[in-house]
Length: 269
View (cartoon, rainbow, N blue to C red):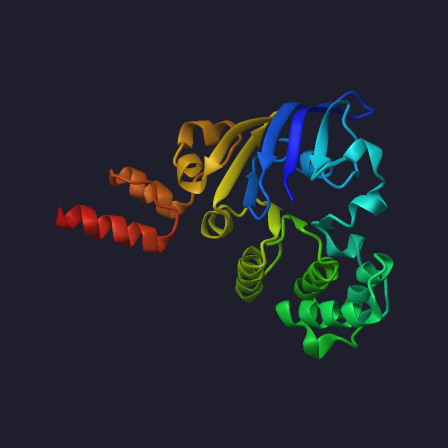
């Protein structure tokens, strides 16, 4: 399911112009990271994708649906949104109930609901915690519950807002595995992140925002090698990318393995 953002501008009631003429397309099944400093417009942009915000100017299409014509509840059939703070989402007494809430509200059959809940528990490694109260879990695992509750809705598009914030290495690894699995299933994944290494290692396309506009949009290699433009929104490329640039590698590298491959090739030449 494609996403089309056309000349989108948004002004908050206090007068702040948060988005200025943003246009972009995201194809079905893409994995896209959106980066930029706080206040760049990242969250404002993605909140237009599920109708939490409505354009001041322009429009947003989710497939053939104009978000101005559909409720947030209706758009939830197509776009799942995991908030930065899981405590803004969790409210039931058990993990399993929390995960079942979304698909149940979407009207799925009992059989499909059970299958989706079990799948989400497995993907997030929450099987042993299914009967626990989410608020008895650590923040790391509460984040996993919030993610599982959206995975179970089986939407074609998923949005993660700062999923690695406050997470340990094991949890970040779980997130990477989840994103890889969603890619295999043909899901569109859009992630807002300040974790530039996580961005480089898990997303093929990177969008850089600053002052409510798109500054860069392209492959990770195309975008993360442009230090001067990234600096405008106070973003540094990954350390491995900066090392490669300083060493004069012939290609931009985004991961340690890419660095080793290019370095070995260049030294052998």
